[in-house]
Image (cartoon, rainbow, N blue to C red; front, top):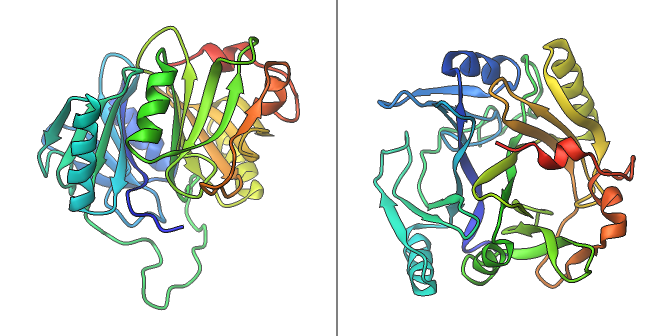
Length: 308
């Protein structure tokens, strides 16, 4: 399908407790490419395959978590149009100036009903991928670290799930892909949404507190690369939460793990293609264990409750 509005996840600003330790960890263990720092001291990274200047921004803070999650849109006209639609819907927006983030143009910032800060932007410097765009060779993993393909999605926790779902689908043009129902069979516990043909670009879980992060996810190319990531994590004594395993929801293969500040990350591979003419998949409460962890077919309390 033609992508003419919101294109994809573009960046996440993550709060870390020790910036120097985190810079080393995201470089050596995650295998991200360090892109420099700004005047505020924030550190910037991109994945090997991403062409835009940055997708991960680390900020020193007293508490772990995520400051904001950004989506790239098609062009400036699309950015202006979506800002008008947000305002007409009753959402207050703020224009962040070009250059506030390194090599990034103007951003439209707003809060969604779950309390999370979301950004839209159209321009970010194209610095190229490892292979280039003229007669490129295959991208061969030939350096240390997990080396993900791209920033893939995030999963957030908040209270007003219905309000967030309404905003993403009616204003930003996202499509509902999957949902989990609570015991009453009517109320959503969680929803998975896409702005593309991926299984999901953001997911939202109902939670008593606003503005909580469950995880930020990075795409890998295959199940074998997920297993390779598990070996790298073990070798570096990374705290693994769950996996390697498979989701019923999205069908992806996965490992959940914690970076040094306690933020949960995910390496994700697979999943199916979704198109707007497809009906959403529904998981009932009695089978939610298989939906989340298809192999074990049971819930993990720590996985569901630990957030930053």
